[in-house]
Amino acid sequence: MTSAERYSTRWVRATVAVFLKDWHSELRTRYAISALGMFVITTIAMILFSLGSEPASPEVLAGMLWVVLFFAAMSGLSRTFVMEEERGTAMTVQLQAPPSAVYFGKLLFNLVLGAGLTLLTVVLYALLIEGFVIRSTGLFVGIIALGSIGLASASTIIAAIIARANTKGTLYPVLSFPILLPLLMTVISGTRMASEGASWGDAVGEFQILISYIVVVTTTSYLLFEYIWKD
Amino acid sequence: MLLRGTLGVLLTLVIVAAFVPPIVSQPQSWYEFPLIPGLEEKARIIFFHVPTAWLSVMAFVTSMFYGIRYLRKRDMMDDLRSSSAAGLGLLFCILATVTGAIWAKFNWGSFWNWDPRETSIFVLLLIYGAYFSLRSAVEVEEKRATLSSVYSIIAAVTVPFFIFIMPRIMTGLHPGAKGDPDGAGPVIDFKMSLNMRVVFFASLIAFTLLFIWMFNLRVRAARLEYRHQLKG
Image 1 (cartoon, rainbow over the protein chains, first blue to last red):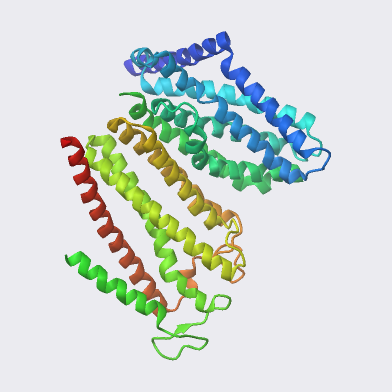
Image 2: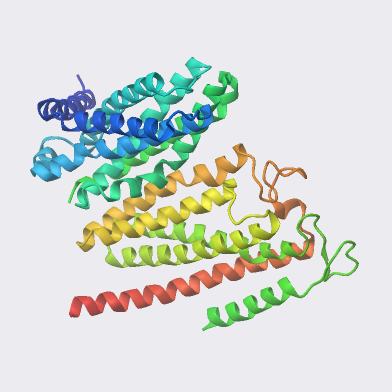
């Protein structure tokens, strides 16, 4: 085994360890999971109450799905970094793992959390809200999956910033919204297309934007994370 | 001194050249602007509105540039430059939004239409707003400088998605946008006559000089304030 190989195995192990640490501490308190779950349920209930028996168009409902997802992400995805500052464990993690491993471990955690959140929201939304019709299921799944990944990757780096700024939650949506807007606009138009029954070919532009957005944001975050993380 | 003199002369010339030449349907002499259907006299906004928008983007890039330099060298002066540029950017961004909205009222019928370029400038406003909220939330200077630099870089890498991709994919109302029936491509290339183009680019240069002048003033003021704080 060369030293480069040994280094990369160590890096992977550190990344997985950071992920597992967050995973176990999340399972112990279930703070993020319950907060996110309750958030989704209350928001969807709100939408149901405000819609009443009025039928809403599939276009409006497709956009509204992302309103729920965005604010749900804003209520839970900052937890992974804010927790370290609150418990005073940031320094210990700094000593144990290289910054890039911390970043990717946290990103992995947020990806899993984000995927669970998206799944729950989409299932509840489809079951409870009448008139939300998806004509091309494959396209919808693709857009939702990429949108969820993009949401998690941008939220992770902003979470790292606000945890350092000691502002808890107030600034989180303010800082995230402009960064997430290109993603949100693309996924909203993609979801709308899926509900109208568009084919994969029609949505090529959307996929190009989503994939390049994810790559660009993750790479930049990886390069900049060290500056935020280390004092 | 030289900069200020050049700026004053150039900007005066641009203002005169933008408003004085008559707009006629068949331009005969060198000083007449051609009539662009649908824009008429309202076409003159291009000499000021576009440079203002250009300036707000340039200020953003400048702010990011000094942000990166701060991260590399950890020099507080770079952070002062970065925030000064962002302050100017916010000012010009508001100017571009307001002039554009007034023009849109008379040309498109309402102040705001969510045209792709309107959306982009709105996002730029949001980013500047978020940048300054973040700065006011952090009290430790070094931390404030680092976090705001990082934020401006992350924001900067997502901005091109609006400026370049969105207007090309969505149909827009702006002259030269994809939905414009007269064809695609920036309005400067195909609709402006040679004399309009000269005034337009002179205005771009004048606004760039204006930015450099205002930027230097602000940085000097910020530096004095910073030194004063250190002493006091």
